[in-house]
Image (cartoon, rainbow, N blue to C red; front, side, top):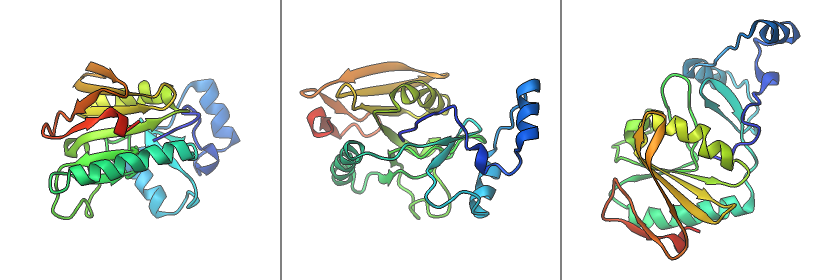
Length: 209
């Protein structure tokens, strides 16, 4: 998910914060990290406006940028293509929540999930359910290459694709090892890629870019 100002939290929507607490935090170096349980309670209480686009990353509530036409067009292309190819093999999930530990609930642009009888209607998927995760990135490129990458690696997402719109390439990350991926492949139009978790599916990169 494209994110701007990743270090800027939505202070105005945090009822526990005011000028006094902010000054105390600055002088004493104390930061309140929002847990997943707190995050879910905020949603149930409708604390955030319906139009607010935010996600929980490592305990911080972060703004997400408006989705531009280039971003949405590439995501539509990926969704249409992979929906056809994975029918009966995986569940397609587009910009839906993914629970990662107790402090993160990002909303990746695209995921292929393991089959589930109720299509994850009784719970959000977690890292063990993910076959492939894709972020389409332009303004948030550095954040997706660093913070998001570390988050996905730490939680063992087996394959992370970063559609780098700035350079018109696909960055493929595999083999999570701690907070990094042991394997990175950079692909361009003319190349092809086979999904590590669904090895019978191969894509031409030109169909994605």
